[in-house]
Length: 74
Image 1 (cartoon, rainbow, N blue to C red):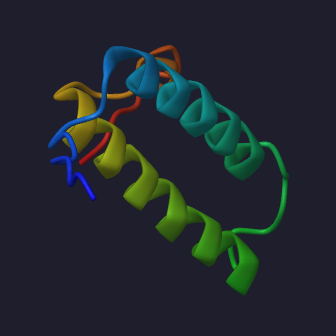
Image 2 (image 1 turned 180 degrees about the vertical axis):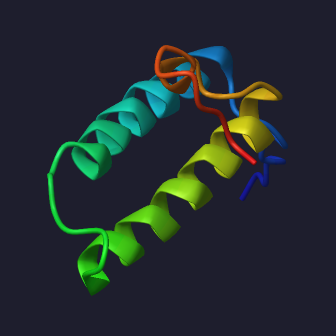
């Protein structure tokens, strides 16, 4: 049996696929118009913060799909 070392970073095609999925998730998070006082809203905001941090950790840059709205990750 031959063991191969797994890569330590995503390939460019993998990063592109990840960014497309991240943008779709972003759109599903910010799309619903619900009260900021509800638990669902707060949970979705928490998820959004983690998503933006993960995009920055993987790409080294803020998410391009956020810049259009004048916001960025923390």
